[in-house]
Length: 147
Length: 141
Image (cartoon, rainbow over the protein chains, first blue to last red):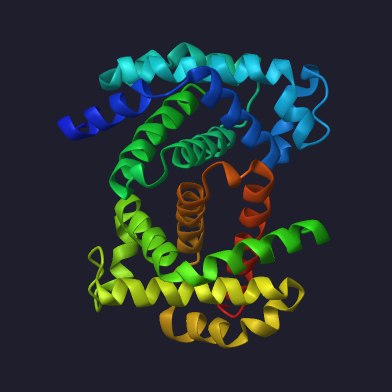
């Protein structure tokens, strides 16, 4: 069982309550596809991902980025049972989408960078550590049902 | 693989960061110590509390070395030769830690540069830091 201090819970809820999901979600996904181009393999049906500009203006990426961030919301609202919350999504990513679970960490790192760029020095080392702990739990839960 | 454009971008960015090497370096180290407490074991002989003289001078040292390498990336092995020896035979820092510091360096840059830390710049610097770390650990075995 993952233990969360009161402070850690507050940090996570505060970060997410100040987020524009329609902005941060797509930004994080775009960044992942640009910084780690091999992740584009999962988006072959999304259309033009030929270069950074194409990726940033691709409407399918926009929609999907927002969807992913809303998916993270579920963990924020169920911090004491992230594993259970994501059981179904884990099966989906494994059996239907066939996503290598190593990729979850890549997207998580990109999300951290996007939030750091937004919050500037307000994203303290302590907040970063808590946020990364949260994302690590999410990443682990998403990889849980792979076999 | 770094394109000519990326090498130029990397050089420019690290040139800009050189005057604030102390701030950038100490911030990245603090982030690493907070997120990855195991990394603190390499610093038991120093005072690494926020704002300490050791932290600032050490952070500065690291950033200046990265900036020096960025001036001519094709010569990285030559530029880093002394540091390769230092890390392999004296410091013997487990190379997985280089990834951790690199990640925290990217977060520091994102906080410092904001929107300017575009995905393209991020990709270029991530690649550079990976190459830097790889060269640094070349003499390990």
